[in-house]
Length: 175
Image 1: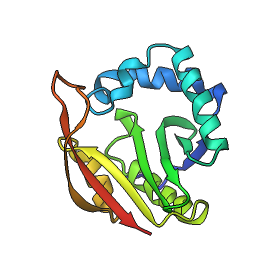
Image 2: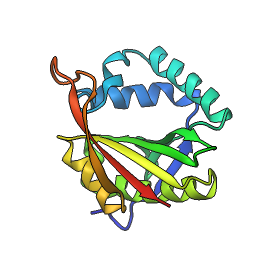
Image 3: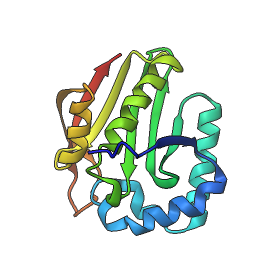
Image 4: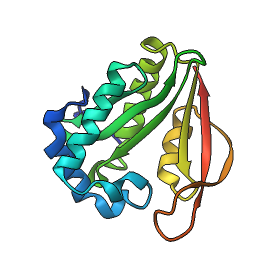
């Protein structure tokens, strides 16, 4: 449960955050790599800086909104709205958090705020969230925030934990 003293803020992604974010990814590599395919390719501060540069271009184009989650002044993870489609009024949510912050409702509270951003800033009507079928924590965050389970996407996720493709759960929320 989130402490009443926890202050959650978003900081839009910027190149200056590359080192701090990379160190957080490195600290959580074993934890994050079970669920997120991009972790394997993030091998240096330069990789993170390059990713951030690409993200900034997509943000400027209006197809991505991405922020660092800061809790009580400490970088705790990230959250985004990607694949923003202004014609379809849709987008997808992605997120990750430092293992030390998990279980404190921080991601759930962050997601609540991002749902409001999706609706107000981007006029999104349908928001999707995709989670590995084995990632119960991520599924609980989705369900707690009113996302409905639409179904299983077979072999949707590339080999991450082993040599096999993995199923994913598709959630959606109509705003």
